[in-house]
Image (tube, rainbow, N blue to C red):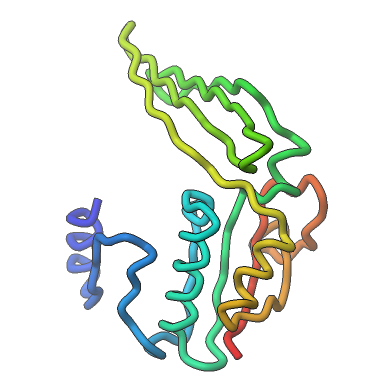
Length: 172
């Protein structure tokens, strides 16, 4: 994926540095005017890992910089519409997602099953479920103040049952 991104950037004449690393290990200090975490990657870390990541983001941002977060696994999003099983067809691949919510850990364990031409592959993932209050506290503890909560990129207000949380924060 990194090679494809590098090739695409080079083809577009863009000078972009691409890195493959642990998202908790951000080496920069006051380097960026903005940052973002999209694609639901926020929920792949437990609370300690999430704190490390958010502190690294804050450290990398300049004062006054903004941070945007996209998180579909916020408790207010996922729990009202939680489904133990979800089927989908993508081209010639039949996809089954089997979800189990672990209440004591606030974590969803997901078995991803891919069926193609009679062969099945299964992968497992953990998604940590945080409330909006917990997310705001992670950010505030790292010096990032929440500026807005939205249900879409169009700026619609966030509410219980929203399909996704889009959060905008600013570094003090």
